Image (cartoon, rainbow, N blue to C red):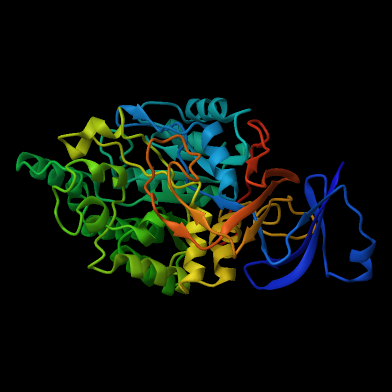
Length: 476
């Protein structure tokens, strides 16, 4: 096996930083060495990466992605190959995607289909959560086999009636089974039936542009569903993880439950930290702006009003640990032939934004502006995802015995985001067009192999391995 030495950088963990050299043998970290020590001086390596003046951090873990997801009459535009290559470019070395079981289908068949999509096609390591889209005796029984498959979390939807929607009694039964097995329940918390009524009323009133997607999915719908999910989790004593939190009122529900000692957790996404309903979909309040331009930013949960302070609340929740992680909910669609399906009817716009390539950069910009610390950046993007979803020790940390997933990040570098600049996702637009980042991903290493360096991609589809995950390591 070959050896690699990352030399002279500042190693940053969730708890601190220190100047150190990182020695890799094969696929694992074997030593973190004090520069100038006798041991460091005696080390020779097959390859040396000079990290002087730069940060050395554990590879990012994006715990919420949707590659090749069928949705809204089309399919997410990134394949497991294109999406994981884009992830690598952005400093993410592991993803956790979602295997899908829809109502009337078998859990085992859905999982098998996603293994087939991903196997041999991923440039970075990958794992799965399991979507349970239909709760019956068969699917409840199938949940018992998930741990053997290395899947220790499953997702349910309080939204999308007729597609993924689960009723309260179904959620209750699934949570009871999850509590028995030790699985983490992940929840899309929006009141789907009520949203459908609001959306139909808006459409019938001639309010059809993308802006009204966010109006129909009002923050009250997210807060109510979040509270209901928390109460069901409280009753069943099942741990709960609420995905893509966007409304400050939903954060308040999570914070209240956590203050009472309940094992409830939440993630937000870059779009809810930076983007807003007015600026992206309504151009300072004009809902007819560009007529259809706002479709680029249609996602669920939706972008929220900046005037109401949701974005500031998300940053605050990340500082106070009322939200524990930042994932992307990466579910990209092109404008042409995909988002355009909803021209004239916002209800038909495929919901999703592509961000997997930019998450690490966008969160680092929060370090630059003082929203979070350097250590919190690492915690949110790597260490906590590893702990939350049963990967810690192997992933999420730079220490002997861990996989050599390492990113060298240059705080003096610069990244300009745009389709014609740094864009590797399979999309014809960028939700982040024109964003400027005061930092740059220089080198990306996955299990000891250099995937990105000197502005070039050196990886390959098939390098990524399937991650069999353990139980969550984040419970109180």
